[in-house]
Image (cartoon, rainbow, N blue to C red; front, side, top):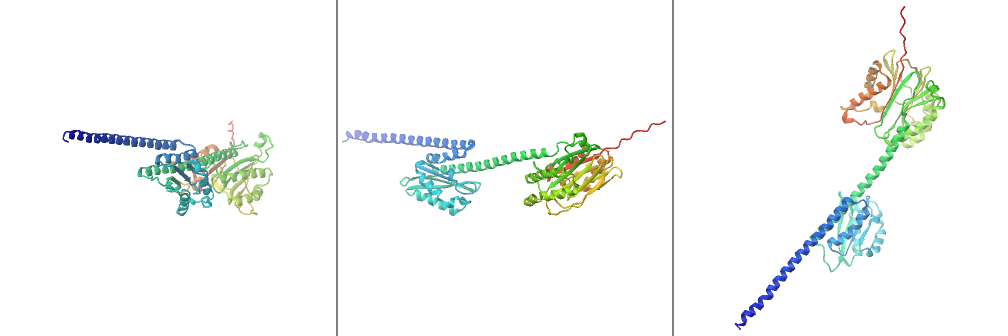
Length: 467
């Protein structure tokens, strides 16, 4: 027995050493396996993050989500049910792995009438209804679910499922599951923002085209009219504006020389409002007015007819138009005018060195069906300066909050007219004073600002010969 003891002892110790060695190897293998699994999971998450940064097709991205869930959480399948921006079920983007089990479930989801309603995904009872439907379908499976949320809004639900006898859902798996859901929410939110930006780009392109068309409708240069100098500028507050001015010969069929010494219509107007609607209405009125000018009627009759023509369209748009219409005879220097509640032009008299308003009674265009308009006239003298303008000039806010107002405009017009400046110089200096008043921090005017300056040429006086 004793002799055998050492042998017996060695025999008993050997299996123990062997066990110890096997256990160490198994532990090393386990650690290696866990490390490899972590590396694989990290690679999957990195790939998902890369796809999120670089994807341009949301559907392709969402197709990956159930597949990644099955790999990260180590489950049989996964289901993604996203919501559209209005909260309704996004049927076109339903995704599921494995694909062979989705037909009946998708059919049930399509038959869910409540899911088609706006705000479905924003109500707790709707989410509970959706979860209940999915749970009934996967009755023989273990199911876990989480919300897809971005900026506090429900963007969908993400499910993972496996056989009943398989227990899953460790802390690591749940964290991975939630990370995938969060990245999915970011992807859906990014796509929604991208769609909004793309729509804005389309609108911007359309507005730019509208602005280009409208700028082409305004005179690109002032006409040459015998005995006067003209200068004009329109600064829209937006790309498309509601201000309008025009110079139209009453006899466009004449040659340039005859037109220069003939009769011309000068008009300035303003649609109440700004931007695209105002610009569209003013474009419409321009066409109507140009047709009326060809009739050769007096200014008051033209405004009366224009009001009749435009009344229905303006009433439907809930907008009105102010318009000052005048015609000028280059031979006699007579200016006839009618006013539809527009800012009266300012006439600086070279003889009296004073400023008067040219005004006549009349209502807004589009206000009343039987509006009547008065007609006034004046004879322009050499050196006289006439300023047409819109309320975007006088209503421009200054740094202190006060308005540019008519009195300030009169003071500057009087100053520059007394200096004997030409029409272009007067216009330039008036806008410089307006810009200085508005200030650097108010570079963009609140309303469209338009000014037109007409100056009658000075009479040439020849020096007398001394005997």
